[in-house]
Image (cartoon, rainbow, N blue to C red; front, top):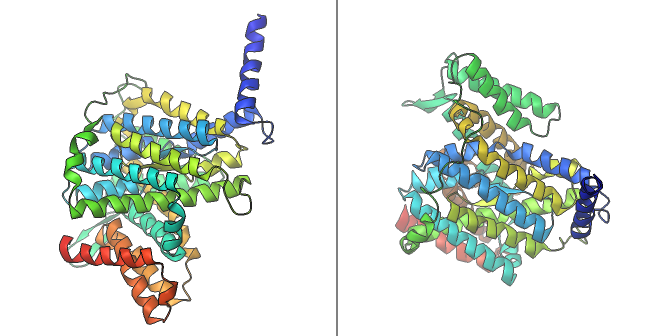
Amino acid sequence: MTSLKTAPKRVSRGADRFFHITEQGTTFRTEVVAGTTTFLAMAYILFVNPQILGSAGMDVPAVFVATALAAALGSLVMGLWARYPIALAPGMGLNAFFAFTVVLGMGIPWETALAGTLVSGVLFFILAVTGVRGAIIRAIPLNLKFATGAGIGLFIAFIGLRNAEIVVPDEATTVTLGDLSRPETLLALFGVAVTAVFLIRGFKGGVFYGMILTAAAGMITGLISAPDAVVGSVPSLAPTFGVAFGNLGELITAQMLVVVLTMLFVDFFDTSGTLIAVANQAGFLKNGELPRANRALMSDSVATMGGAVLGTSTTTSYIESSAGVSAGGRTGLTSVVTAGFFLLSLLFSPLLAVVTPEVTAPALIIVGVFMAKALGDIEWNKLEYAIPAFATVVAMPLTYSIANGIAFGLLLYPLLMVAKGRWRDVHPITYALFVVVIAHFIWLV
């Protein structure tokens, strides 16, 4: 009996020494609660990511396993090495770029796209190790970074609206309002409403709870068939595991160069922004700098490489980690707990059967709202910033391509800065990217 009573205490003391729990002013219990909160806030990705990548022809059960394992791997590396309460998973926006722009838009096989994801992770790792990241961060104007995030948000929301048939194609106006009396569309609208209520009421896992309630409503009304089981065996990873290695030779094209650079660009700035935002919330920043920043960035790149090998799009740091921080998480133990939940979720693959497009559409729309808030940070009163930012934002949903949005912004920004007489304020790397964009539109589009 004595050993049973003292074992938890020993675990707590060991965790305290490793994660510096007491030093950070938190407790073992608080860290566990924070890790649970973070998981609930981002658990929706377990079902949304397989559906998005499944639309590109990938095996949905295998992607489910890859998603859970990539999230667990990234969160463990971040928690055990960088020791930050920041969890990782395949990124929203990057999965849409992978499926809808690269595979469906450019006609690139998903196997080759996975190889591109792997290479982007390797490049990210090199940038983090060498410290080149600072020069690149300074090269891209802040307004274009904000515009990229907001544009991706609108793109994701548009995908959700389309999947739910709230917005449908129209020959006269390109798109128009769908039939809102359609039962499946009504179910999606119900999902948007309940998810919004959960979030407004302060539920940290509001998006996930919204999906659960929407799926339940679908089963009650007969729109969704009940699953055969709740817990089941772990699906095979064979359809996607290691596929990236066999397609590395397909990357030696100008088209794939643009794809890899876009993946790298979006992941790099998404990760940097998330790290700064969560670290600032937790009080980690010292004189504006983040301690162990290179470790955090390298953790992200390792997760991307691992995720690509497993069979999923770019894995990145999640802003939903702020939910765990708000619950008191201050150490890497928070991320380790989140990783444990992702591993446990592997047993719940039968639930994929009830996660239809109408169930995931509300999540896509609400995540779009979160990302669109970056619009408020753009300097709209300065046209040399506002016009490229606007082009970036609107081009993503209207051309159905994240890459096109980024390209338009990088094309217009240097031109307008030169016209303004501020050509010296444009970083040389930005001019180099301008040339790459010109080449992209001339030879690849």
